[in-house]
Image 1: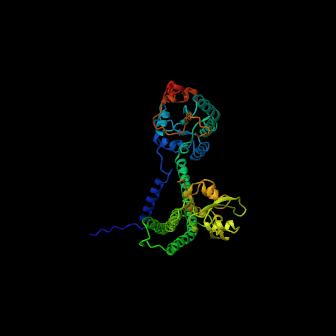
Image 2: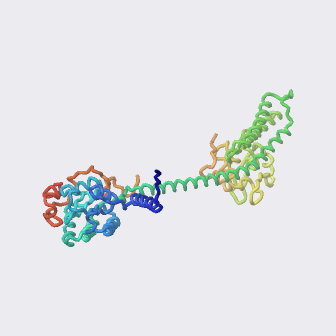
Image 3: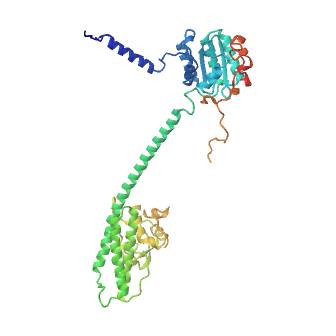
Length: 464
């Protein structure tokens, strides 16, 4: 006999749908069936929600609980409210301490149990006498109306409660994450600004180096041509060791200048190039004096008007256009021109305004001038260039280095007052968690008698 198992066309999908809906209900917050008890109550209080035991929803609806939860959150106070039945699930004698221990939140605990209302508070959150007064007044005003009593108590007590509602602590994750995000944004912004600044600086340096390279290449070329025109044979019988040393030094300066310029990556690198050229030209002047039998020249700065003229021979008075007179080192030819009332042969460079004397072409030529004149004392260039555009580079804090050969923000150092709303878990002093005796509130001695924290056991002041 063959047995055929036939799947129901309707039952299969419906069963699957039912399972999925059931799983969804379990996963969605607040949809799981609550069985009641201290654990469920504590879980709700940790989330800052007013807890209503399923057995009490007929007297205090979920809508009323949600409204009261919103009121507490709007006030941002650590007030924990639970509405529970007169049941062994919530032992009258220990329900407050049980909820405080399991919820672990420093604050005010208001419990409606059966037909009675009680409140306890950590002293750091609310004074016990104040809690007693507000609880008694709320209970007496509403005659068994749970919603009216709880709303009245929260409304009047909240302004007196210290601390913050659970989930809105001053040490909340949001207040940690937000500053970190802002710090990250500041860091990114600073990085972008620094990168942009560096890019602009690099572009500026590249443009300046390009302008300097044109001028320096002309100087190097002019010096090379001088070497080529020099009628000197180191192997000649008339040449001595001192002459050969001068000649060799001039050649080395020429080669060094070329290599340094090829390797230059910043405007400042040009200083070493013009220093080498200045030294090479002085070597040629020394060689010429040796060959002609003259006294060796004094080591002097190059000609101010054009360093390609070689070492200066003397100082002469000169005034730039619109400037004050000053003494400048000049070569022999320029000294003669000045003495004759003629203009000196001035080195000009190309600018956006056309050819200009190098001292009026801007600070970009600071490294160039520094290499020629910087070795003769830090005071030389400022004196020569005062009143010119290039002089501004050397009149203030040097752009290029040439040498001679407690918080007051109301913080008083005190300790911040501890306030409620923080999580302490079960680590709290029960003597510091109290409010009043059962006979002092919520219907007098009928509030559980000795079973609900009766007598001195129900924590009035330090009796907890």
